[in-house]
Image (cartoon, rainbow, N blue to C red; front, side, top):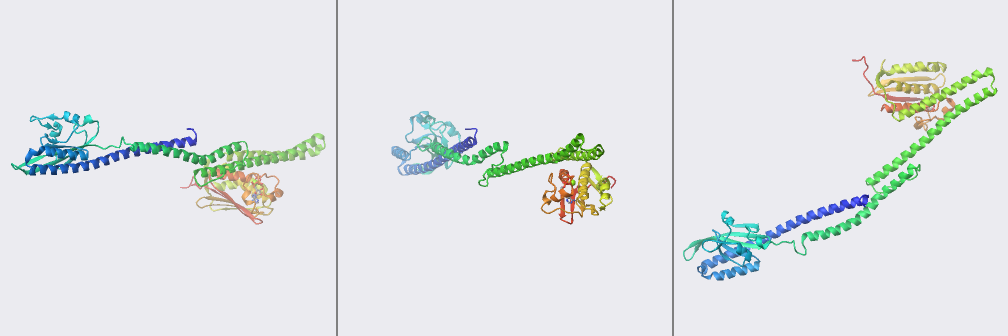
Length: 494
Ligand SMILES: Nc1ncnc2c1ncn2[C@@H]1O[C@H](COP(=O)(O)OP(=O)(O)OP(=O)(O)O)[C@@H](O)[C@H]1O
Ligand SMILES: [Mg+2]
């Protein structure tokens, strides 16, 4: 049980309950004991006061010490009523009067030279305290034999003009009482706390059981779903309840399943696209070779057919290379070789490599450069690839006599635009043209050589530079591809 979530929460809860109950119990016990000691002391003060009044009356009115029996009796009854022991001592510590006192205490009192019981030396050594004072414990060890804790209230008194000689009587009234404790009673605090702690723990058990079941259910569902996903079944989603962290986790889990499903679908699609794109040229090549071997294609025609075969092989080679590049960029394996270079120079080189096609289609090519040289910080080969793909598309899709403009300018970043006045891209196709193997419907007729990887590769390259690429296009009017690059100071600019 300790290993399950239920067990862990239960253990924590019971531990917290036990600790908090015992701490509260102990603190409350101490507090209550102190409170009752305070109350007791207050009561003892009153007893001391009463005793002082009686003593004064006894000394002044009843003519000296002759009636000491009477006073002792009075002392006895007050002591009995208040559950205390009353001593009247002189300032030198000798006991003049005392109510009944446990034998063990009397035995440990010493007698002085005059034969009086007297308070311990430690008491006598202390300076005389005027007014009230209070002490708890065993009163200099005198009460140790009783095995209980005592509280003692002392009151100093001084009575002038005591007849018959008008002397001043001075001394201390000591009132002792057992300190009331709650330790042994039926309702002792620790006991109450033990019982209520037990009941609390039982309630906690029930609560934790219900709560953890609710908590654990989505987790169990997730575990089950994860197993199914591992075996290729993406249908299961977790029901989301409430708004807590578990709900959040369930939501993320569902999101992850969506993403996985998506990924799996793209993977399948990707594979089927590749096989399709490879099968077509292979069928053609096979057909031609069979024709040559069977003699259906005459030796005069063979060269023409072989050059067709070479074109198909070239196409397959480009396809395989493109797929490899795409995979590498997507996996983030390609380390970018970042340098500072002149983007305008790269554009010029691209145009030269496409010169042949541009001239053949009688296209007008405009270079609209804001400055003669424009330096960027990027991987020059990769950017060359992006430019070539964009320019190649523009040349491919723009009809004869069309116009292509390449524009570069710097704002907060460097912007590169490739614009044409070709057929444009239908609005509903725009979100997809950067997808792998995506070819707009129309281009299937216009361009038979492409497989739809050029823009996907371009986007991956730009994204791996942490930059952006986007397209603006209107059907029938043309397209404009815009990408950004980080600008840089040229090596010869100071
Ligand atoms: N300048 C453009 N004008 C019109 N349509 C375009 C233009 N550029 C791209 N497209 C559309 O976007 C699709 C995807 O372009 P992409 O470059 O990825 O593939 P492709 O050129 O067909 O093949 P590949 O580049 O792999 O040889 C194209 O098939 C075309 O439909
Ligand atoms: Mg292309």
